[in-house]
Image (cartoon, rainbow, N blue to C red; front, side):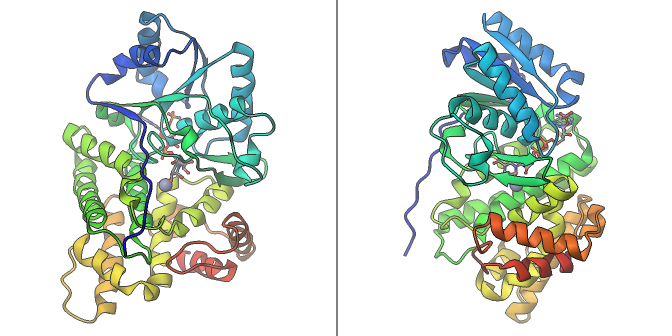
Length: 393
Ligand code: NZQ
Ligand code: ZN
């Protein structure tokens, strides 16, 4: 029996060359009076993108304040700063110019302005938000999918805790996506984004549901397509078609489309990665690539048909031997792909070597954040997660 599902994607997508020049007009459509332009470290200023956005807002007669400085694995302290600024300036709309970190920081500020009390409560699971300031996005990296998602991931940098809060309230009103903007990305960030896009699809693909065929074929095609164009980008980072294919796939991978009737999916690798990001500040996609193979080896016995299907339909493995051999070839082919785009397949390659004490701490923290057990393919307890971290060393 297929599972019932809800699919909600309210984000208007403006895709293609020079679309960022329409930002002012898009915000005017929202009826906003005062905007916060939120951005990251250097890239948006260096490329001239911020100037173009400011100009577009000025032409549309929209007043704004700015707040930059968002770092990857965005910090709670800047979220608090943004909330104070928005309240002081009576900001009624937030424009995120950047990637997942900037968008998530903007979402968290939006929650903090629209609700009383400490915004971190939502991330700790203490209560639910009732509202969020509306926001729009000018996307500069194809990766997290936050431009259309209900997700928001923030790091309390004082505690080294990275936590997610999911709610439809924060889905952006619009997302401007010009693939050309991603051409200035360092190769490592491009590849890390690719790993994240694939993982958003895989997290939903691996489950115990009787999946709808349409969902599976969309997911499988999306993954094959992303791998094809990611290989092209290794040698041709300025290839517009490849940038466009991956950018659109990034949004489709995480706007809910690939999760229809999958019962939600697994998400264990994401939760394991969030602990790595909180403790070691690694790039999210690279962290996922480093942990996935160990997760897959640990849990595939519980979902053999799915792993076999993945090997054959996504990685092109020819099923000649036993089911177990096909599964093993599929996992190895996935890791070969990650290596081909210079992504790590172990924690050592990721550049970290957690001690046994750190592994135990991450596993305990992940169990607590997951509310007991992490994932659905095999609901992982603390000991399982510690073992996966060890296998990934
Ligand atoms: O700060 P700047 O100078 O812009 O540099 C950024 C940053 O260092 C750089 N960059 C971005 N666009 C660029 C560029 N450099 C050159 N040219 C450009 N066009 O790239 C670096 C990474 O940026 P970041 O925003 O951190 O990347 P990403 O989009 O991968 O976001 C990662 C964050 O999103 C969270 C992750 O956990 C992580 O914190 N996620 C959010 C999700 C969601 N909200 O739905 C879901 C994901 O699973 C993920 O957890
Ligand atoms: Zn992700």
